[in-house]
Length: 596
Image 1 (tube, helix red, strand yellow):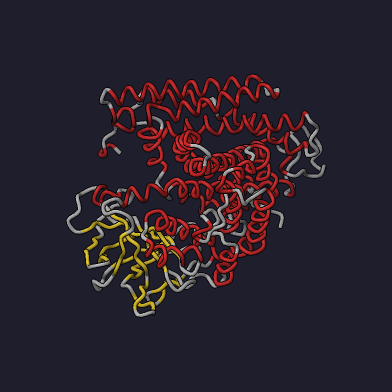
Image 2: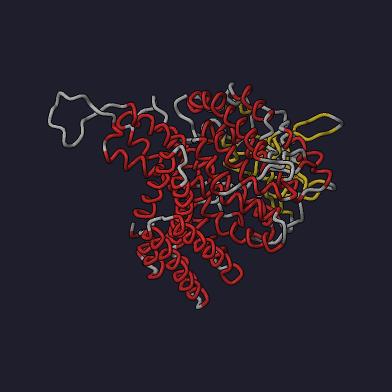
């Protein structure tokens, strides 16, 4: 296939040149692994993505699952795809050996699974959602729940969902109304959920819903919400019987068409049983324990979808003849491939900067997750955890928002063909938009970043980021990187620090609404600084490789071009965004609903 989905050389560069993933094998958790085991897993996911998932993408996009006789029928191709994903043990790749996992570092699994997402994110979604559900039970469930629910989820015998959203509540989980009535060892669950991806299908015999509900008499708001394991079918007398969980309807989405999004009803006959996971009234806290990995996964979706479209646009630009160079005078001269036109290269370079910068963002965030969980000493784990918390909203939102821009450019490169369903960029554009909504909208990420993450522990996360950036600037200078690039990043982090102090003072003074009014701009500003930091790091590695005469010089020269583009065209926007935040520009705060 002409489209690699994700370029292997980029992944190897991140794992083995930029971030030294094999160094993690010195930690006890990953001692059984090596570069050889990492490469074996990557080879397996690359093959599955390119040979199995990608060829099924167009058919699954064209023919979504069907809702018939009260049940969902998945696309027939999933009947052969799903077992092959399970055979690769994707669902428990990062989990400990004692629960049936492979205990791979998240940085390796995230980049490996990105191939599957790029190939067919709907197909991967069945497994990715199950992993999240099983991990919740692993973290908070009793031994019985681990035996009865977690084990079959990790094995792939069953699939799982996270049933959070309700029609009247949307993202406001404090307004969850689903009820849980104590009934001995279990609870009777009654309520409605919506947008439940993979909530029903015919690929496995059971689906387990990790469901938020309010125990009778619980306090109002967030502090009264609990978490339950609610299976589609429950076990009685050695057999699986109906558990009064039913599909109320299917949502017809513009993208992710291969994975059903459903409205679900729990307890229509007052016979839906659920089992408490963790402590009563701690459901939201338990869910947030899982959010880092879930948000990294969504960011990975965004990078993967943008990458597939970028490589499609790149190949198209190389083979599509159209027009002649600007200075050409002879209309009879042969046409040139459109990649010869400077503006097409502009669009391709912007895609490259977003995709490869986003991939680096996912990789470095995943590496901090590995160190936060498994670092060799407490100080290392604490440092990694603070940086992980800071990076997670960025890792989720930058690939989704900038990835959508990248996907739109892929359509543009294809011209009129990009607008047609005969070519794939329009489908990937549709898929991409959902990533800015999944696992907390971009607005929620901005509120979380400014309202919680950067001010945690007296601003420690931002101070640690400054340390990382100063070290990257020093390495870049030593490698011979253009001093102007370093100066731009140095100015950007200083702007971010001073702005954060100003906004924090607003909050301390009681002007919280003013502080938070431009949280979305603050999120974008911070994203630019962080991805700029990563591009400077990549540039330093590329420059050093060229200095030592590395054989694939064009690869490294491409990295330097993308770094130059990002640092010269994107990073200067930090000053403008900072001014909006600092001045609390109030156009959309002041406007009244009736004025629209």
